[in-house]
Structures are given as C-alpha cells and as structure tokens.
Length: 356
Image 1 (cartoon, rainbow, N blue to C red):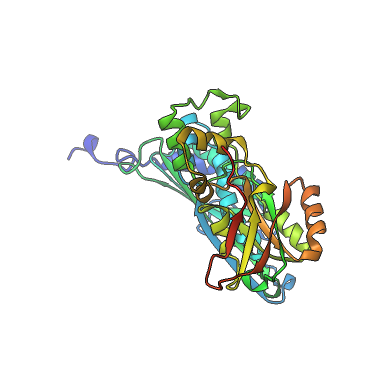
Image 2 (image 1 turned 30 degrees about the vertical axis):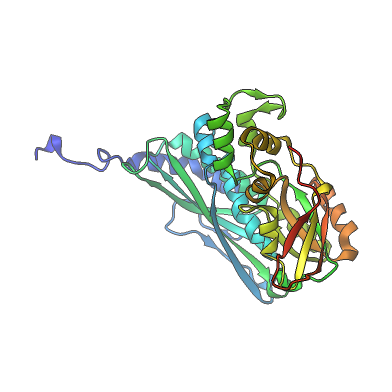
C-alpha cells in the first residue's frame, strides 16, 4: 500500500481532533455545573469527588442510570439539542431522590455517528443546566464516535448519577403507614416517557408538522414535545427537611399507578382520585387523534403527575405550603389504606377515566 493510500483513523470515520475540540467547548459547561467537593478539572481519566464524611454518621450511596429514549428523535428532527440534556439529568436525579438521597454528581455518555463539536456542546450545555437545577456536579463523561454503526447526525444519551443519604433518613416502603396522604406534583408535560406512542400518533398518523402551531397547546407541536422534564430533586429534599415524608415515587415509564406501587408495602394500597386534577391538553390531543384508550394512556404517560410524595397525615398542609412556595403545582391525590387483599394491587385510581 502506498503512503498516499494508507488507512487512517480519520478515514475510517473517527476524528480525534474534532473530539479534542468538543472537550474544549464543554469545559465551561462542566465548570458551571460543579460543587465544592469536585477535585481536578475536565479531561482527566476519572472524575474525583471528595465525600465530606463529617456530614453523615452512616452515609449510604445511591446510584441510578437512565437515558432519554426516543424523545431524541424530536430533538434531531428540529435540530435543537440542549433540552434533551435537561431531560437526561431529570431522569437520573429524580430516581435518586426517591430514596431521600441528595444527588452529588453525574457522568454522561454520548454515543454519536460523527463528532460535531457544536452539537456536542449543545447537548452538554443542557446536561450542565440540568445539573445546576438539581444541585449536582457534572463530573465528566464520555463521547464515543461510532462510524458505520450510527448515521453522522445520530446520537444517543445516557448517564449515571450518584447521591448520598444518611442511613437513618432512607425513604422507602417500610416507612409507609395507613392513613398517610399521597401528594401529587405536577409535570411540565410528557417529560421523557411515552414518546414512541406520542410520535406514532402525532407524527405518523396525524402527520402534524413539528413547526406548526397547535391551538390546543398554545404553541408549536415541537415546542410542546421538547418541553424539558421538570427536575424535582431540590424540591423533594426541601420537602423532606420540612415535613415527615415516608417515600417518593418518580412517575416515569409505566405511569402513575405502576410507579407508586413500587414504593408501597405489602398489605397497604394507595387509593388515588382521578377527579383531583385535569391532564394537560397534550394528553387529550394524543388520546383523541390516536383513539388511545384511557387505560392505555394512564399506563404509558405521566398524565400530568411527575412526582408523588407520601407524607404523614399531620404534615399535609406543611408539605403543600413548601411545594407551593417553591412554585411546584401540588395537590392531595389520595391516601393509603389497608388492602382487602394483601397480595392485591398496591396502588389504584378511583373515579371516572378522563374524558378526551
């Protein structure tokens, strides 16, 4: 083989120089999303975080890994990539806080067909913004180029977060008691679940343009679908500091009932009332256009409830006041009762299905 025809990594589709450029563009975003415990800077082989053990008697580390799912397809179609970074952080840190853990740091993984530095910067800018909202540090990550496996403009996101909670303050099913009250926290929209169905209905069946204004939504369809997931981590921690919280439930894939059931103990059932809230217009739009049954809607989407807190009955008013002061829509959703069948459902929705 002649020198002029010799194979190179760049010719195979991997551009190391573009990767180095992307790292430099990411640096200010990582520096923005930091905490005092972070040691070193961007670009090392590993991120360093000095755990201040004098803050806890018996610290328990919590970890969570998640992604954004097919919401990325909407971001790619609109060539808008910063909001899905916020979604990524939300999916991770709000799983952590369910245990009562304070999110400490997050590391992202971005797989791309080709490193386009400006696009990587937009993604990481969103991740950094999410970390700022959550109060955690962006402790590095990895951008991997996969030519031949992914298209030039394709990418996928995932992240792992780590948090810490005092052993005595761990939240979970074992804390839940009969007569506890279930408080709902409103979602900002679809969040990051159910997009395969939403896209099928709105884009494939209805062929609605993403840049078209939708009267029912009061904005374009693309703006609605890319609305960032609300991050509840700091609000949940503030609530747990002011009220007797038994547990939280992050409403993601599977819907409200399935996720709340995960944090309910055997022998108790959370009974929720559909009549306490009205789902946002985007849910009605999907249901009507796709003729999606109410039961299918409720097991696919959050239906307007993004996080749930189970609190002691005497602390309901205090809990609602804390959340209202933090500008989180909140209301009493139901209560916890002894189950007629200990092996039966651990969460149920009562009342009529919403009329779409």
